[in-house]
Structures are given as C-alpha cells and as structure tokens.
Image (tube, rainbow, N blue to C red):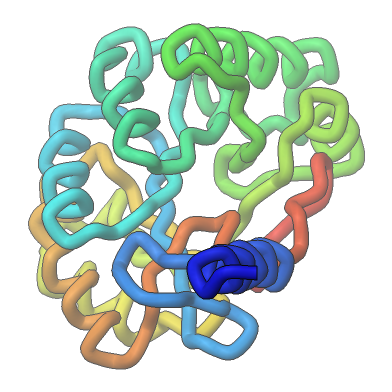
Length: 235
C-alpha cells in the first residue's frame, strides 16, 4: 500500500469519525463538539421583515449560523427573496405557523392548517420541507406535538430571551443576551425590529469573547438527531 493511499484512508476515517461523533467544522471556524464546547444557537422568530436583510448581512460577515422561524401569510409572501437567501446561506428555516395564533388554543383542524400551509410555502421557496417548528409564544400541548410529529417537525423552544419584541434599545438587547446565555442554550430573538439587527454585532462578538461557539441547532444537539414532535429547550 502506497503512502498516499494510506494517507487517504486515514483522512476518510477521520471524516467518518467526525460525522459519527458530532464533531465537524463549525460555521464560525474550527472543529466543534458541543458535548464539550460551550455552544449556543441563535434563533429568530416572526420574520422575515424589513430588518432581516441587515441581520443576514451580520451573520454572513461574522460566519454565524442561525435558525429562522417564519410566519407564512404576511412575512414570507412579502419577502420571498429573503427566505431563499436564508436557505442559500445555510441557515435553518423553520415553521412558525401561518398567522401566529397560540396553536394550543385553536381547534385541531386550524392548528393543522396553520402548520401545513406554512410547510408547503417554505418547501416551495427553499426546495425542502422544514424539519423544525417553533409554536408561537412557545405554546404547545399534546395535539400540537402530534401534528408536529405527523409533519416531521421537532419543536424548538428556548431558554434565553431578550423580550426584544417590546424592547428596541440595542444595548439593552445585547446585555440581556450576554447576561442570560448558558452553554447548550437556545437564544430567542425577533428579526422584525431594527434594534435587534443593530444589537446583533455586539451579541455575536460578546458571546465569542465569553468563549461561546455559535452553532446551528442541528450541531447543538449532535450527535443526537432531533425527533419530530419532541420539545427541545436546550442541549
């Protein structure tokens, strides 16, 4: 066996081991294994909107992945190019229902319509059906879980939030994220407000200064696979 062939076999073995153990190159650079590293995932609700493009610019510039949970009726139809850009740039595109009702408070057939209709339009725009859902306001129950399982959606909640839907001061938004972020955490933000986009550079830089690795939700939970219907708040 030649030296080159032995080297190629060794490289293939390393790649296979990485895939099996959840270790792979993270979008913010270097090998990431969130079982040992201090990882967090950034998530955004309610868009896309006028400020989403600025958010995507920051994420692209700083090589940060994120998950966007999108509303179908207004935001997605008004900004289809932003949805396509999210997918093209490698972000996770998730379901946030059609109009944003509390899914545990509407009739089961309406909850199904809310999720299924959004699945369809996001699949049309991105070429793939979402595998993640964030029930509006985090309201879920057995019926929502059953519908999510049926549609192949893992329910993603959060354990860190900034209330940036009501607070528009970028400094305060950043301080709240940095003050509440914990290893394995899912950070909830809102991409409809200019204050969030303005705060994002300080959030990203501040998290990295504190030793956090910013990863996708899939990477946060690797090597476990997110299960449809199940609820996830942190790794």
